Length: 588
Image 1 (spheres, rainbow, N blue to C red):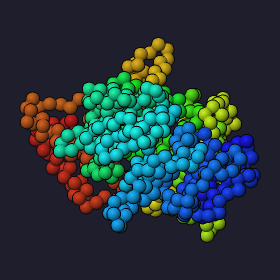
Image 2: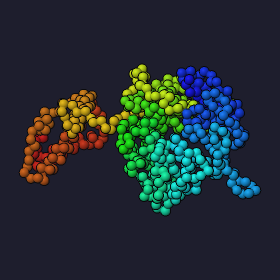
Image 3: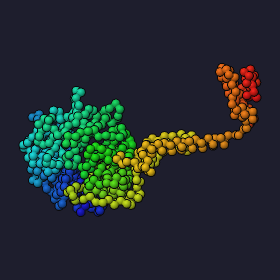
Image 4: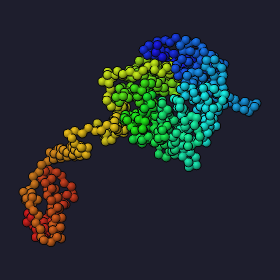
């Protein structure tokens, strides 16, 4: 049976079956009490949730309770990768009598429900310990040091990684060998840095596998690829003189010691970074709107440019065969689905007011939901096919709220990669991402209506392959092809100017000039031999030519202005001046 969709809201927890049985009821009895949070194990065989005064864990195959604990006010919970440990976090409190802090981070054995260890974890940020996939190593950050436990034995700290003022860390999920990265923010003019170590070799800076330092960093987000061989570090500042979003830098670090800044072809913030499940490439969405999306390889070289569009997040399906570029938050919810192998656009859809997006484990269906408290109006969920077909839409009642929605996970390998069958959708979709249409046009003044705008608000770029060499026809070189394009552009421009000149000349009245004037213009202008006299004669001839044009306009019936009539009266005196120079014959 396909994994169901699990929902949490004011009605408690309930399930609905996913595709292909969309909309059919699930056997899950549900929970009617108000639930603070819920969590699945990675293989989907365990589901845990907490009410106001209890924590319940069930087996999703039989829907029977595994154990139940009388614990109140649990805020966060999660399972270890193999589902053997359940960790829960409560708000930090202080005992009023002893003035000592109460433990608020608890680890339980899932098979028995026995408490294994409790810790004090004051802040909710980075509250949860991290495990490797085989649960060989568990790590948590405590007072600027990383503490490591082995094989789910939390009574003994095996190793500590001491890095002064370490604030963030990231443990690669694969291994052995196990690798971990730590971030130390800069202070007093010193740069921030990230160092990568192999567990348990933490013998100072010289033992680091790789290191990368950088300025302009208040916080970082670190993401390992699935094989633990490469790390992406997104550094951010809260304020910037040039950017509302602050400054961002995207850094690539390899366990082989390589480190570099990921190149970006457009200025602006980095909205989202996502590794492919195949661990061989990653996608970055960046740049001022309309944002650009680019696919990179493990050398931080661009593989494909998806062009620009209204997007700020990227999602790969579990098989890595489909990439969804979406625009949520203050964007309209545009969805673009790309075939990552052929790098072609499959389909487009629109899911406005989306707060949750998640691919189904089969990689062909996906979920969009509008949840509270982010949005309290229009709460509900939709189930789609990647070709853009909407299979189901459910809205909750007006006096109820939907808080969370997620697919039940399945063991890896349950849904292998399949050949995408989207011929029908591809025939309808454009080969490049089209410019999104605008229903309500921008205001234009009455005198400008019905004409083409002189500028565009956004220039959208089409997708392109930066590694594909341009095709050269008939053996032409690249420079020859470029010059040919310039010549063609000049010819087209000259043709347009000629057409405009012919149109203007045909619209003007045709008046024949006197034969004496035409003969004088066509003949060679005589010279007196004196440069000063010749210069004066040229000025007189220009004035006589202007007078002749006025006489022609008057003959054609045009009403002259007073200053033009006065100019006509100067013709006689100008002719006399020309005669005094001994050149009266060249105008008579």
